[in-house]
Amino acid sequence: MGHEITGVILAGGAGRRLGRDKARLSLGGEPVLARLVRLLFRFCPEVLVAIGRRRGLVPPPRARLVEDLLPGRGPLSGLHAGLSHATCPLCLVVACDMPFLSQGLLRRLVGAAMPDRAVAFEIRGYIEPFPGLYPRTLRPQVEVALRTGDLGVQALLRRVPHLLLPEEEARAVDPELSSFVNLNTPGDLAELSGGTVL
Image 1 (cartoon, helix red, strand yellow):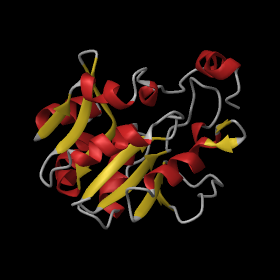
Image 2 (cartoon, one colour):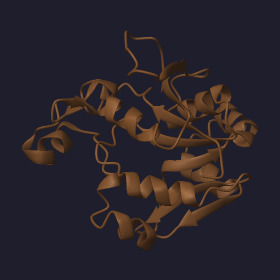
Image 3 (cartoon, rainbow, N blue to C red):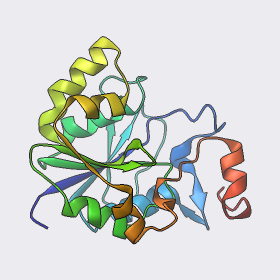
Image 4 (cartoon, rainbow, N blue to C red):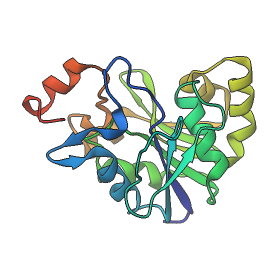
């Protein structure tokens, strides 16, 4: 693989729009979180699950829960927790509400890994921060963004050294771009697989 990478799953959101805890969603009888942990272990020697606060969440086998050090500030809080607790120089970061994330897409991302810059996809002209690769050395910039209230991960990516992989690279392994589907609302749940996401 060439680079040692820590897997990080962002699971700190309250799921207010969804009306439930995203970290506890299941698809086809399997917890989405467990599927993501298993997927990340194919690329990473360690997997962290960044949570906003302790809430009785039991991590899947071999994964480790880490609390957001600065909770309540969105995905950037979880990214900060991952960068702070990771033992590898790079972090492969995904969100806990990405049930269709593909191994092929992660392989493309990991294949583009660089030690000194973030790597993400640009889809339909929009930077998709997750899944993404983030060097641990970005922690100071993330802390500045958290302190100043500039909480957008896309904005952070624009300010730091980065590589954006084109949409064509994503479509080569995921033609429908299903990997980028997020579960944000009850309507999202109902649309997917006839409502089989529980």
